[in-house]
Image (cartoon, rainbow, N blue to C red; front, side, top):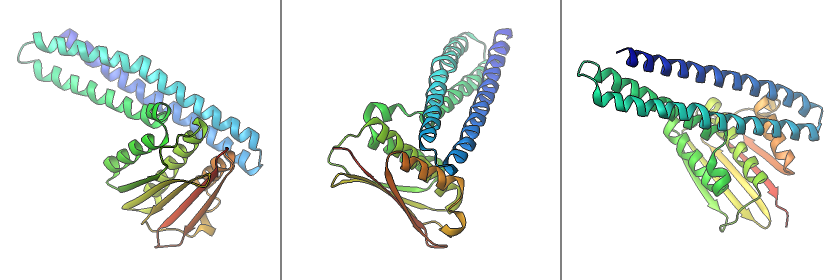
Length: 252
C-alpha cells in the first residue's frame, strides 16, 4: 500500500509539473507573439525571421524535453504499476489499474503536445503527410469535417517551405475553429507552373475584413507568408464563409 500511494503521488506530481511546464511555455510563446506584432508593424523583416526561428527552436526544445524526460519517466512508472498490479491483492488492484490508466492518459497528452509543437512526420515525410495528420486530428477533436485535396505529382519541398505552410495551416484551422463556427473545411494544396498554392475554405459565418484586418491572427499569417516571399488573399463577408489563398513561387 505505501508503494501504491508513492506511485500515485509521483504521477500526480508529474502531471502538475507537466501542467506548469506547458503554462510557462505558452507564456514564452505569447511574449514572442507580442514582440512579433511590434516587429511586423515596424516592417523589420530580418528580425521577424529571427523571432520565428526562435519560436521553432523553443518548440523543438520543448518537444525533445517532453519526449526524453517526462515521457520516459511516465513510461517507467506505467511499467512498474503493471508489475505491481500482477502481485497486489484484489482490494488494491482496481486502484492500481486506475492509476495506470492515468499514466496512459498523461503519456497520450504528452504525445499530443509533441505533435502540435513539432510533428515528427513533417520532418520525416514532408508537408502532405503532416497535413493529413493535422486534418485527422482536427476532425477527431472538434467534429469539423475536413476535406484535404492534393495536386502535387509527388513533389517534395524544402524544409522551410514545409514548415511555413504547416504553421500557416495550423493558424487557419485555429482561426476557423475559434471564430467562424464552421462545420466543413476544404484544404487544397496545388503545385502548378512553379507555384505552391494553398486554398483554405470554410462554411463559417465569415467576417468583415475591413474591421478585423489588423487583428493578430491575420498579421501572423501575413508575416509568415511574407517571409517566404509569398502572396495571401482573403475573400469573405459576413454569413458567407471565407476563402484564404496563399501562393508562393518556388525556386527552380
